[in-house]
Length: 74
Image 1 (tube, rainbow, N blue to C red):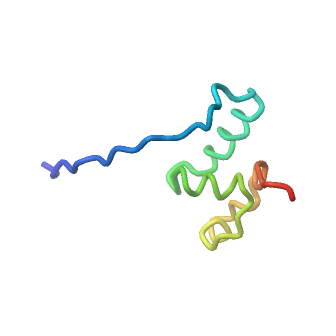
Image 2: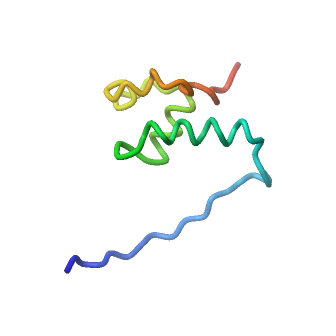
Image 3: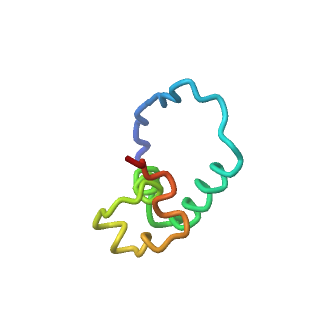
């Protein structure tokens, strides 16, 4: 039987956001679909933000239709 590890608690700060528009939810879920068995929250954030991170490029996640969808515009 595997040793049970203690989980680390964390709190997410929503900055007052109560809900998201359905199109944003669909975008996030589409990005998560590309990550099944390859990555987690951090990698999803990098895809949606349009990161040029080595892992994003290695997995060709920069070709995702939602790559850079939430990139901050200057």
